[in-house]
Length: 352
Ligand SMILES: *Cc1c(COP(=O)(O)O)cnc(C)c1O
Image (cartoon, rainbow, N blue to C red; front, side, top):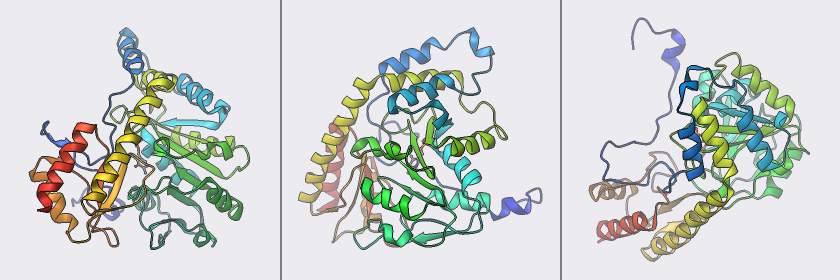
């Protein structure tokens, strides 16, 4: 706190990202990064950008990247917005589409950045409780609202909401924006981008940080009706004309073009997840059904905070949230088979 702070800054409660440890040797299963590297074609495209042209500003509209996303999903480029990580895209959506009198609705167990953006932009919200199985019940969102947002699959639970249920939600809330945050959709779900043409109130965000293994590059995007996209462009062009640099535009577009590498690495993560779920169940863990690149698990006899601390002593880091309802869960990112084995071995030692 300082006398130089504005009264507004004093009210902020910022997001706390997962740890990025300086120790290289740790098995890092705490922030849902992809254990495999980015597409070799993406790396080559980025290397090709390292030239004298870096003295020039990038394309403010990132047309090359919008085109790659539009082609991949079979939508017009006017329905695509890109930003500096999907966190930035989400922030613009909160700012431009959720600032109405009514409360924004999102699940009580969800991405912890949502309440932070509400604080930043002065948006009232209501957290809607997940059911006892940690599932979203769409009936509970049938109430006056200034918008609805949730991750699908949900984070940190990993649970997927069926496309039909999302369509029911859209039909029941035609007058407010429904934002589906598909950060993890490529690990076992079907994107609702296919519904964008039918529902002008649907905005879908995705990131290249998880399934395309580019968390370090900071690229995300949204797909929705051109009117929603225009709102995001208005915010973006009132804030930063060049959120994506030349290297990011080239690398992200190439990552989208390399469908074979994408499909192969996603499948490897999914197979590893299924194997890891079986291992943890054999150790007595209850594991929520996951369609993401992480699992959410609790042990009926062991305290999760102690397990997380024990794992750390064995060189494995996972995420533990000190939050009501989920304080006995661990969120474990899916690593390579070797990393997952290190986790299983460390857990075995912690559980004796
Ligand atoms: C990781 C994540 C994001 C943010 O992704 P970036 O593109 O890296 O900013 C958004 N939503 C959820 C639910 C996430 O887990």
